[in-house]
Image 1 (cartoon, rainbow, N blue to C red):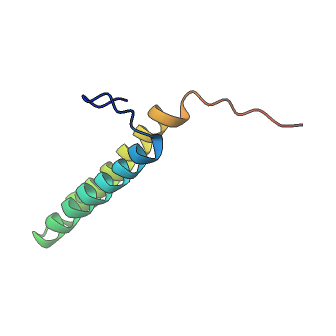
Image 2 (cartoon, rainbow, N blue to C red):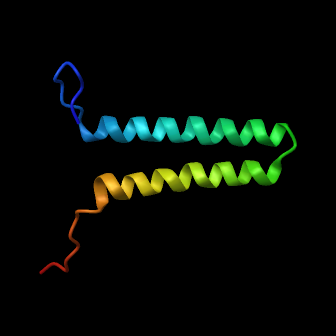
Length: 71
């Protein structure tokens, strides 16, 4: 992934951004919905947020890896 200025973004920066966005969005949604009295919907928002992050990690980093026994 390259920015508009042509700078190549390292994988660790992408992972840090994904982690920060996941914690922020899923956590805030969970907190706000719980405080509003929607505990079940809050749990769904939390699970969808973190589950979505797992899917993104698989699609971006893990999908093309080949796992073979060594030695």
